[in-house]
Image (cartoon, rainbow, N blue to C red; front, side, top):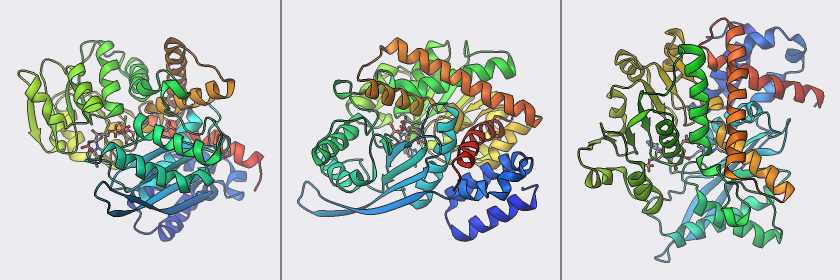
Length: 447
Ligand code: NDP
Ligand code: 2IT
């Protein structure tokens, strides 16, 4: 709940203007609650309506995407791009292709991205986009036609110094390739307008691994600072089995943990011997199959229908890496009852707000997405630097920079958490640390 009348009024107005936008309002509320104390100490910020301006996107574009499927049928989807805040750099953020995509989801992701990008310390503003197109079950040619049609509208809104999209749910290397090819065709220019590109045309080494690796680097710092421990010997449960989940599994395993479960939207697998990641990569990255297939290939592994049952598995560390609001208060209580000492967010806003508050109040490590999953966009920032320099760095160089950035993000969010009075409150810590830079840049640039 809000402590100041000012924050309460700002949020009430936002609720009125964005009625029914559940995810957006959830993110806005969480952020406003965290930063209201900081704003109260800065009357000039209040005078200049920095919070109101911060919560309002600079631009929101919605457009029609028409494409033809393999049967020759016309299909109509909705495309979006929110250009949320450009105070500290060009808009930057992913594109999500999932049937659930709507204005509320794009706006929540865009708002989160503003703070996340600020935390990376790289010069990137925040944006997000996507479509309600469902890539599942579509042929390569259908995905190509969709991406080309999507870019035929999006191209006019983006550019290497204006807005630089990347991947998110449903958008990986294949989609970025199709989008890049269409942008280049229309504009007749080869620029770093997208990140997550293939290595043969300007992509960065380690971008594929970056979000999952970065999550583990951040978690490693939190485990050390707050519980004086590490991944060594820990049992880990990870939801999802996409890009973030796969590379979080890889790094957690390298750091000495045993990952015993992964999921997709249909169900989860449990492998008490530790997930065989080569099998998962083959199923998910090569065959684009379902996680259920794992049990046909690995002896002793179990499959359970329904993805939420994954939180009943006993573990030391839980890493939600699938989607928003995939972990609620009851599920978090079950995790803690079973001995879980850390919930580390890989997905964006996977934990419901009351569940996150429960963890923080009970001194369970909670690493908020905008800090702990910032490694993906940070490495996108490194890809932009390499494109501008027209050279490419080695895997080790990029990974080392990523590691340094994640340690810095932890230190910045931890410092603010300590100042807030609860070192476990990395949520307030991340929100305040991210907001400060954006707010100062906004004030310096006037209206
Ligand atoms: P992918 O498309 O590679 O994988 C998504 C995974 O999450 C799949 O296993 C998918 O299962 C599952 N999933 C998606 N939607 C739902 C849903 N509504 N219910 C249950 N499961 C679902 O995406 P990413 O791994 O890239 O993204 C995962 C999360 O991480 C997202 O929240 C994204 O915003 C966030 N993120 C991604 C970054 C990146 O660099 N890629 C950077 C920072 C954050 P299924 O196949 O059944 O749909
Ligand atoms: O949520 C995210 O940070 C991403 N999907 C990555 C965005 C990016 O620009 O690399």
